[in-house]
Length: 112
Length: 114
Image 1 (spheres, rainbow over the protein chains, first blue to last red):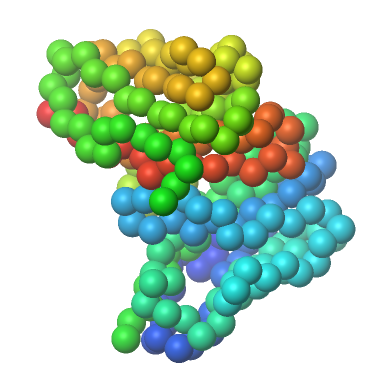
Image 2 (cartoon, rainbow over the protein chains, first blue to last red):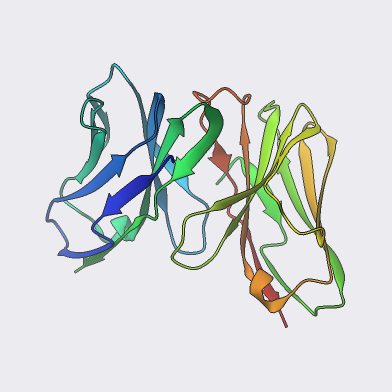
């Protein structure tokens, strides 16, 4: 069964600090992995997308890594801002279907 | 602003009402999706339209009826809903149904059933 597990479930950090969110998946064969940011009451917005051959991809202060061998990905946020407070969802495509598998998300709160 | 537009943003309806949710995109995408999202949970796929034809129905109750009038529009008709149907309903679109095509989401309709 295709599964995507994210940790931690929730995270509270102080403004200006860095943090790393984790995503483990069992989806096989693997096609791509995306990280989405979802603000409260809004739809998910794509941050990064990585395919099998990509190890690292950055989007401003967001850097995603992928280890396709261990089926793990991380999202590193540098110098956090209050606007980073949101849910971060890991989405993996593959597994013989074009319908992606969603993780449950990590809820990040950035305090001043 | 999101490139996928959903209306209304909020909807409150009784269990006997009939209402419709609307979704529009002008990116030339040929695949469109309806998702249901409960609080603190990931989106759950409901329907997929590919080239204006329904290609996936994830065993959704018949009180939800999708419609794709043209390649830019996607509707979700609601009738006789239950309180547990209260959720955020998200529409998404993608270039095609290839798994490498990213999905673009709207901001959703917050639905409350009284």
